[in-house]
Image 1 (cartoon, helix red, strand yellow):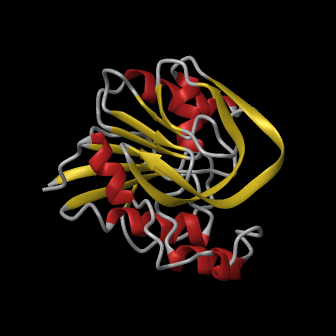
Image 2 (cartoon, rainbow, N blue to C red):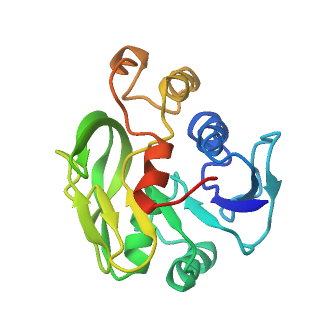
Image 3 (cartoon, rainbow, N blue to C red):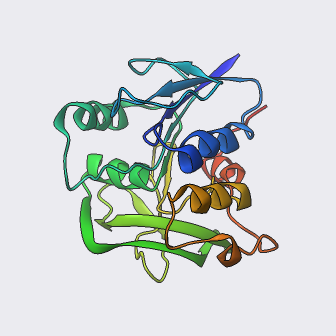
Length: 219
């Protein structure tokens, strides 16, 4: 059985944490799920996955969003995560904070905005345009080794790909479907979005599209 390491940086949250991770692994059948949350000792009980204290050899790595910030560096665990990004040749996907710390680790720059952003926007990747959910206060201003694939109105460096390694990153949340957004609104995790903003009939970027973008075969 293949393995996926989820660097689970919202492990204390119900919507984009527990439910968001569950939404991701729906696209990864027949994978053992390893959950690594180096930023906290107070994670929720997911009821799935195997909690690990350090990264293990796997077939895919996903770095999730986080309430933490690259510009407010927390030395020990962020340094360990940076070393993982710099050293791995494993297919690697970064979402929101994951996008930011991967670019930072590979020579880029991250900047903090005055206010957080919560919005939906169209974004085009490889000549396909879909809706995406953006929830962030920091954004990449210099991509470093990464190449910019797509921009949005509020994030000029919204999607990146590494030119030689299997690394793909997005500033938005492809795991945020209707159910995640509803829970986020109900739980207070999302204040700028609510269910009425989220048009379920719209074509949206999802986690399966991210796997396709990196060329990861789930079979």
